Length: 113
Image 1 (cartoon, one colour):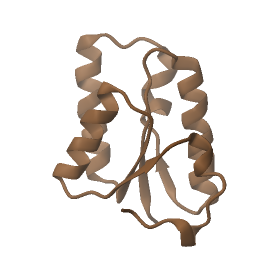
Image 2 (tube, rainbow, N blue to C red):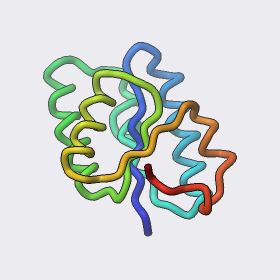
Image 3 (cartoon, rainbow, N blue to C red):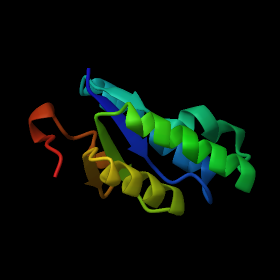
Image 4 (cartoon, rainbow, N blue to C red):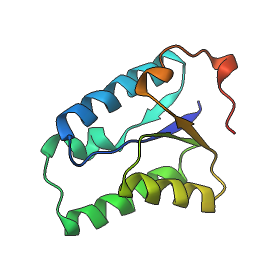
């Protein structure tokens, strides 16, 4: 099963960002893929300081290592780190303008560019 890492902003609008990442997760499942959603692991606590952020980003890099693709939604310092890491490790990255772009797709539309 294809594993998709979801790169999505967290800080600044934590509740909304967690909801959006949840919607993306459901859409990826509907497409028949396995979503890897770090916001589901860390986002609900709402507490991320600099020490925890470094640890969380290390976990995200490990999750990217086991992923087949990274799907990027939005821009943030954390997303930039994830995208660079994936690119440096030759893991395809697919960029989306909106969380709703995934919902209207089918598998034939999905080719990483």
